[in-house]
Image 1: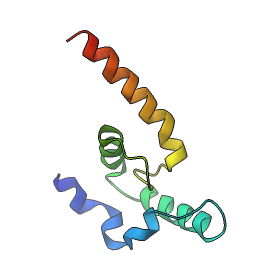
Image 2 (image 1 turned 180 degrees about the horizontal axis):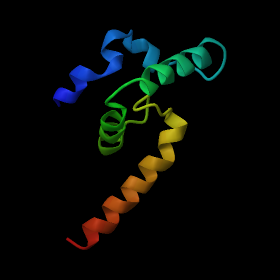
Image 3 (image 1 turned 180 degrees about the vertical axis):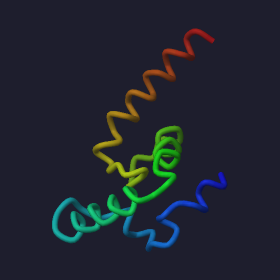
Length: 86
């Protein structure tokens, strides 16, 4: 996964991408983390990794936990559907 070396987040404090809570400083961290993702050339690969590995915590590919939850559910449904026809 050499794309990870090009990720903008490698130059940031990892804790920024795992805000604790949903108000105050956590909201500020969430917005700051998403700003890093918006300028990241590999944000899509990051999101793809989060979805394929079932990441439920943190900011991945510019998405929060709540934004990723429906994407994860849809990915699981597709996986189950395809498994039935293998």
